[in-house]
Length: 141
Length: 73
Image (tube, rainbow over all chains, first blue to last red; front, side):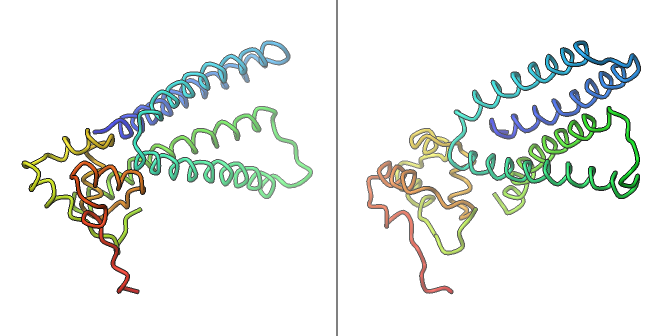
């Protein structure tokens, strides 16, 4: 297993952990009806920590990839970006079509849509990397 | 990512150069062993700089390592 595959598994594990933590956190925040500075600080801190860990990990690993691994990684990133846009649009419009244009939705739904799209994109990214490697191996390496 | 029209002689050149392993070639040209495997199998077409580095490693012109078949459609 090379660095890119290890990175993909690491990200996949990170996605699962992040989903559990974020879902728990969002549930708690909704339950205590957090708003104003408490909600803002909590979300900002969570995103800063998650983003920083992911960014540092990516930069350090990406620099060690060779040209083929960078191609695989970038292709997976493009797929993930597409998945993020599709997921955001799809869920948003689904809500519109299901609930109707004049209905009201709880305020935690928009951040939940964003988080769901983010996690879907990350999942697609990791899966795309691992799938490309699997295809190569299946082709008779 | 691969190229059906690009063939190569890397495997033969490795064997002709003292049974050089894929790992040794990978280390010399600065890529992973998986990338050398993919290039040898024709699953990945290397960049021009990498192709030149591979040719330089074997001490032969690049056209002796890689052949482009322009007969096929």
